Image (cartoon, rainbow, N blue to C red; front, side, top):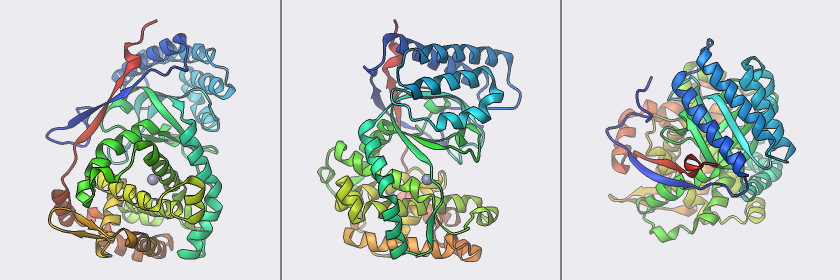
Length: 433
Ligand SMILES: [Zn+2]
């Protein structure tokens, strides 16, 4: 258990402020209720931070108040799914035994005015396996939702590209829906450090194998992380800062890839289960699943139909990918599965002469990146996805940072570990009716 709101442990942290303005689409009454809800959720996270089977009566009375707030808040909206989600949330807060049945129903909705989550939820694998009390509120981001929806429409075509270039036997398991929001209020553990910008519901709320699932993405947080921490690493790749265009253009590329990554998780060889590999190397299994999703996701963004329909620029997409790989890796390759995945990909790209260290920065051979990643996807498909546990373990032995502590430390020393984090300046905290 950690004793500070920061994770993972470090000697110091650099905090960067991110403004979260008050949304102008909500009524003053709605803003007031949301303000109260975040304060109560903050209190709940102090009363009983971690989910256990036995709650406390004090927590129960806080949740009853939260439940009443959700009922009142529902009356402030016209959109049926926004109201329904709030009513369901109110029911769950007043009777926790309904959660298993009602949480998947919330995940099946498509709110147009307000998206929210209140209760116990889990964050980073690696930080903790338990769930902590949090609340968050976001507005649907229509522009970026459209980008994500187009990626979904193109998925069958892109899957055939993967079949033709990697393995004909690749199939897609039923995927997870995607909801993109801009966060404007957050409290409890979800407001600790580092900021988490994607939740899987209702799995992160403790309901596994739900009939309906969706990923919630805080787009404004994600874009801020890119702008502040990824873009500023351009010099590590030998690029000038101006080589990366403005954020609105980058946002389309980032969301297209991130949705591609999510869909990439569902691309497997028939009957493949990660259970066998997971039993022998749980961390390695998670790391390699993230690497597969990253590479499948990126390759799907680089196909002709994706580039046309989404107006994506191949060079920019590759640059964004490399900057993000560095950002992930520099957070600590053994602390997060997605940072471990970045290590796999960067190591592969270095071995394939796409990245050559000059002593001060990488010299990037951009035109070699796509073929090298296609080869990486093929190598992971033939070992990990094939269900060949021995070959998968051999791959992990060569490429996963937890089997290569010394090499991973050297690389991290060269690139510099980042302790940069953002803190939200939430204007809702100062809102009074
Ligand atoms: Zn993932």
